[in-house]
Length: 161
Image (cartoon, rainbow, N blue to C red; front, side, top):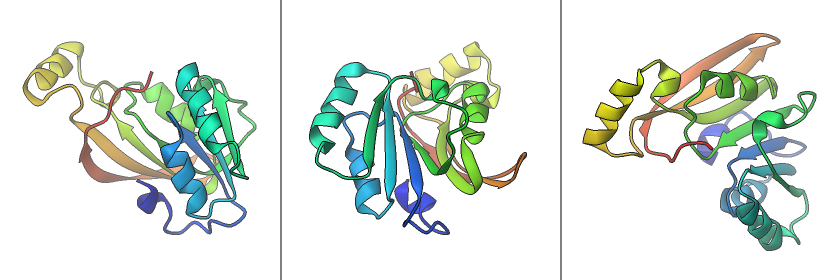
């Protein structure tokens, strides 16, 4: 996912939001890739605490325990990577608004967020398993209220909590 967001973004003097950062592995990779400010957000306190411990000596990294949907709206990022599939189009819209113009977001969009009914989702998951059929989308903010999106293929992720 990181390689998909990197092209076209100058890593120096950039800010990245890592949604669902878990214990901070991808957060560390983003910082190592040269992004100057990386903010990891994890809703599960024990995972966020572990990420803080592992990355405490890494400059430019901040770990927040909480829900990414509740971050201050005024904070904008050059890039956003989401480490779980969202099943709410509202989550996608909320995160899109946190991109700076020219910013990019890589997000797995689950079946429900693509408009499928609960019965359809249940049937697909019965045959394909619980972590299948998310569409990995690259969303770019090209204007104040204008976004483009590119389908990067089907992937399997856990649900965003």
